[in-house]
Image (cartoon, rainbow, N blue to C red):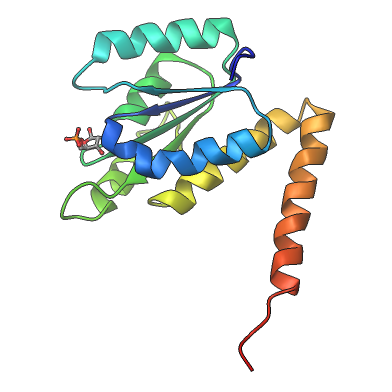
Length: 163
Ligand code: RP5
């Protein structure tokens, strides 16, 4: 998107994009300017910190962070900013995302991250949660979000089961 990003989507590895794309799709659907980056807390810590500082200074208001394994990406980002950080645990090891979930959800008191479900449902919900935060001060986005929710309800009500 060419507009100034309001949401930053960060992932620890390119391999995480398969999951985080579910967040990007929702942000696109709702017309929320965003930026997606691959930055790792343990492989590129300096560049991660630089990005957090620049992105938040330039207007990013919510950060979605997805990572697998000993997932510290969200917590490390939260340590560097007061912008809300939404964490998406990714199944990247034989522990199927439980490792990342526990790592993200068990942030010590004082530096919060809001942790969503493991995998694509969590990624999609992170984008919706980001939209809800931004919609508090954006009436047009609030209306788009309301219409999106209503469309999902309509889908359910119009479901046809096999005879
Ligand atoms: C984590 O390790 C990443 O977030 C990813 O989920 C996992 C595996 O990364 P790659 O080895 O595929 O780059 O840091």
